Image (cartoon, rainbow, N blue to C red; front, side):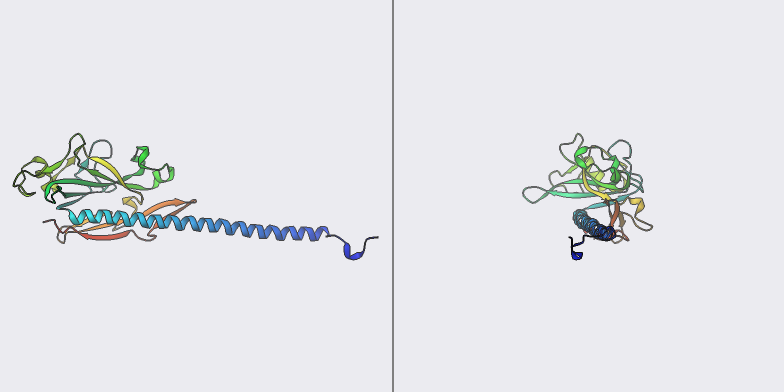
Length: 251
């Protein structure tokens, strides 16, 4: 004979227990998903902050050492092919930098041009990680550099007794008159930064490059944009990061 105290769970009690377990499992799953999303966003924001710091520091050093600076949204093209012209949506920053010989004497000047461009225009597989969303929503910053190993290097090499202001070589004349140059070809290209908010999407009054000739101050403005677990994250969230740098060596 079964005693009264040994009776099993009723169907109602079993259903209630299963419902409670379901609620607890749902809460745990939601917490885990939220934790993973928060962790992923935190890691992404940390990487974005590091990328912006590296970018602003790199360009800031270039501008501080430059002897010529030009910001172009028209009237200048870099290399050949579609999309080579500098524009409002593809702004350019051009700088001329001294290069020192092993004896710490300036013996040449090199040209660097930085241009914002759509990520989809970067076709070399080694230059970017496959990301269809990014190809449609962000821009990259490319550096075009005059070098000896390219087919038509643009280097201002000083002759004996020459200075940058007196050098007669055509490349030196072109660099001195950087503001009137209309095109540069044969420059080596490198990817400097990825996942940048497009220049035309930074908001009214904001642009990646703005140069005040009177004060010789260049303003850099960038914002990092990426998609993390289905959500678009921006850093900074409201307005682009801004850095002002003085071109100390520009006359």
